[in-house]
Length: 228
Ligand SMILES: N[C@@H](CCC(=O)N[C@@H](CS)C(=O)NCC(=O)O)C(=O)O
Image 1 (cartoon, helix red, strand yellow):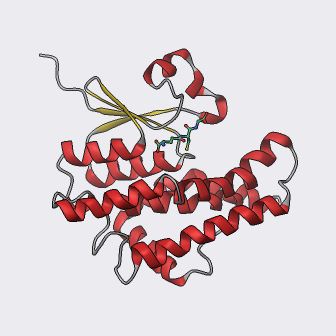
Image 2: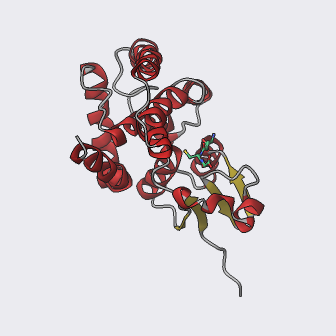
């Protein structure tokens, strides 16, 4: 009898939403298979991968033939389908809505602002062989600083995690994004004690899966330091 196939995901761990997905799968122990897609080699543009995701982006999830793109949708689908512990994506409507509120905001705030700093400090210099003009980096950092202010005063407030007393998908998506500028040697939380305390709570909750998923980013950071 043909068995049910395990969930398959297509990931590159230099991608923030891919790290969030890998960490979630590890923490919830949902049986899965990881297929690596090396973005730097353009593997997201092969005809085979394009059939899976015409947007040529990672991550992608395939669950027994059901294909899903967009990290947000994938994480929420997996949490619901595989009955992940409730704190990840609570069933109670108002608690769930608070997670949805953050994740909707995330994709137009934390994500583009943190990613832009990484693009300007790491990807563009790699492509052009030139450092990015300082003013562009300063502007991107100013936008990011506004986002970090909102994370502190609108979401975190006085609670331990972004949406309440326990870790949720909101914290997972946020932390993976906030880590990204570290690839260029920039720790954007160094002068933010409130967010640093949040980060260490998130890291403790995620245990080894956090460092495992970020190993590629740490090695990029180490390379950027050795160039200084
Ligand atoms: N909104 C999508 C964004 C996915 C995305 O932007 N992926 C990037 C890596 S972080 C990618 O695959 N880029 C490949 C390319 O642009 O060629 C999600 O959250 O899943």
